[in-house]
Image (cartoon, rainbow, N blue to C red):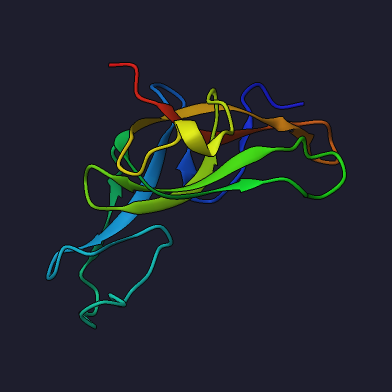
Length: 139
């Protein structure tokens, strides 16, 4: 079993020293940010102008949905969210540490990225996964 967890998605980076972070790729021509590595900007078409950046850990809730039915072994209800990060990136994930009640959820609610165990999932060798989540901003 590995000493550190495996990233649940390719754009989650777990350095040997320092905190985990989400990696985006920013176009030096138009400033568009994408999660996956690419050679060409999907917004302006610039070639070979993409560079890797660490994404912001704070943002605002853009859209959300409460999920009441899911795959076996996935606890419901949970809040699936789309968040606009403060640096301009948009990321989808789950909103945690918050009651899944529509009366309590507000668009533009300040949130922060947090990192934790990927719901107990493990690979075939027993290695744990690290994932990212959103939670209401505490600072």
